[in-house]
Image 1 (tube, rainbow, N blue to C red):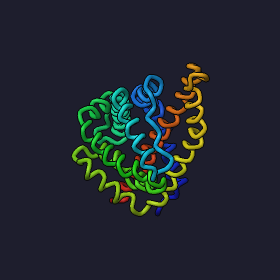
Image 2: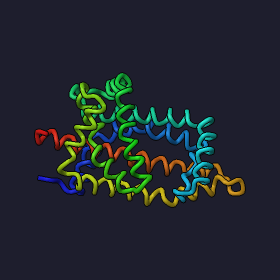
Image 3: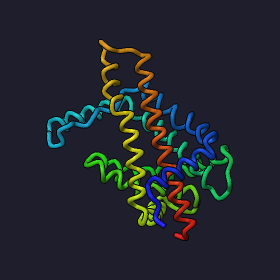
Length: 248
């Protein structure tokens, strides 16, 4: 029986609620805090030009990104890397056949880090391009690749490429239900963060700068992103388990 997107979200919530204490203990220091640190201590990545065909604006953006990268990119990459370890640790805790503890899951995530990083890159490229070109394709790719991280966590012998392929097969039949769940989570996040981005920009202007309010907005933005990433992992876990239980 093909699940509905509401079934997937409800099951994902049950997976989270069952191990919420452990998941939050991992997510706090490994996903939320590094992302919050770069929000508060580093300059934000320059926004893409609104006019995609404006070559002058694109050249100016590339120069701005280059200048930004010289002073900020390392810290963003480091925060993303730590966050990847956090997500991998949660996935291993939930899905590893060895029934690992939190410490054991963290150790396994670090030992297999290069594979998780490669998997993250293989997912981020099509999803990022799809979101930039036209939001829907990016969300579709995210839906079809949502079980890749759980697959890699559950099967230590898998390569990153094979985990991608396995996710693509597992998500073939319930693709639209999964897409509905991903779109629902994306819209919920967007509703929260959409008014915060211009507020953050406004607060960082010299005439409006308020460190306390900047910190509050940064906390809300980071919390929304953290919750979204964990929710996507929970849905991916449900999808992977359903596929395995059905013999796929």
